[in-house]
Image (cartoon, rainbow, N blue to C red):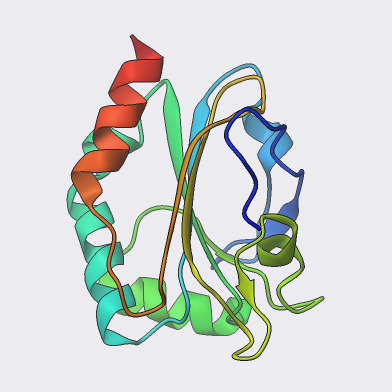
Length: 154
């Protein structure tokens, strides 16, 4: 089951596409976090969704919010994917232990070894304020994230 709205978001530290550690705690007290899990780099729906996030980056990554994308791909895969797609936000690797963070958030598809399309908006205090989990082949709606972030930043 995915983490529910109102629950404390599970803490994590993962490496981004540049090998830098990124922790949820880094944003505590300062920024809301849009945490976007996706199944796999270099796949059609995932590539399209992350391109949409990149295009909307000025509204998602502000002085009050941060965007973090996570898949179970290796850091090296994340680097090539982010470079190829021109992604300017942290693309985190939940590779080892495989899917531990996706599992903590309740979005790991253990049979396939990938994260489902789970999205969580986490406020400055580390509480999940909104979440949606779609099937692996079902894209999410970008305007939903923007609306939720606007509401909690107001």
